[in-house]
Amino acid sequence: MAQGPRERLLTSAIALMCERGVHATGLTELLQHSGTARGSIYQHFPGGKSDLMEQATYAAGRFISRLITSLLETKSPDEALVGLIDYWIYELESSDYIRGCPILAAAQSGASEPAIQAAAASVFHDWADQVTEALVGLDVSRAQAEPLASLAISSIEGAITQSRARRSTQPLEDLKTVLVPLTKHTLMTAA
Image (tube, one colour):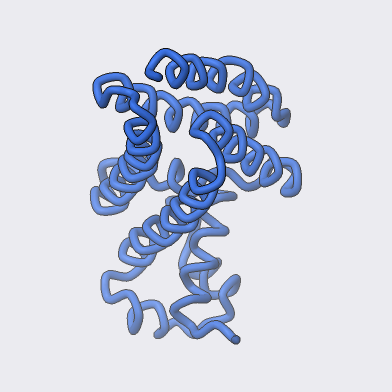
């Protein structure tokens, strides 16, 4: 099924955020990339570029949330983290380190874009909450699960950033050697 202008704008905003960030993505680029008319932005996003970027942040967040849900449905939390890390390794390598995380880009949009930053904060919180609930469901105390889940999301985001800068997935591989055993140990001591 063909995407309409709203979906094309969201898809383009996410792609350009991954590559360039929020502020480096201009309206002209968005229109060219999405193949939409200028009026489409204001028709579908009355607040203009800021509104579009906020909604793109939530849309990208839902995509990764579905990935996390899918991984947690079939894997233990430590294995799910490996799956999430492997997803980012694939994304970075297949894009020649051009595509990063759009949620991190949204978080870095600055104080001039509070709605976009708030969207990023909400998405990060949701991802950590998914991991927290999976851990709690396996008898890890909430007092242990919440900081571990927050650490996992923060560490993955930081490793994505380092990997892009270094043009190497080694930071993500390093994360597998530290975060995954820590998570597995937490699960074993909770049982």
